[in-house]
Image 1 (cartoon, helix red, strand yellow):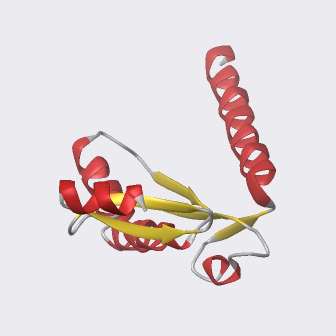
Image 2 (cartoon, rainbow, N blue to C red; image 1 turned 180 degrees about the horizontal axis):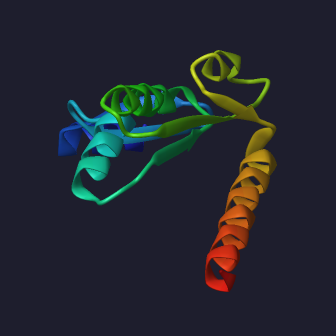
Image 3 (tube, helix red, strand yellow; image 1 turned 45 degrees about the vertical axis):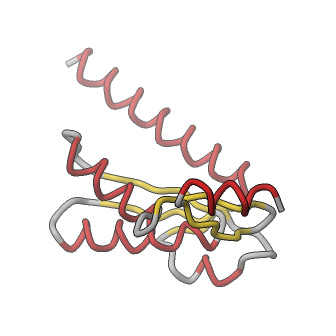
Length: 120
């Protein structure tokens, strides 16, 4: 398989997922990436939305960051194919459409809150 050859030639790891193969540097996963990003940015909270087994390390990173005092939420884009991911999430929504609706709801609430502050 050309992708596995590419991974071997470049020192990357090939990690299978649902209908994907992710290429990553050794020792890196979505959890380490999320943790590093959170440490580099000013943030008041963190949220990660995932739909595959490769997202489990990011869900764990959200829990670790929360234990350190950073509010966080792990959201599972639920599906019949990856049911054990839901057990690791704080919130399960119905697929990609559910994630989009959840994010739209957050954006709408932020808009309402901002309008109240401006009108005060």
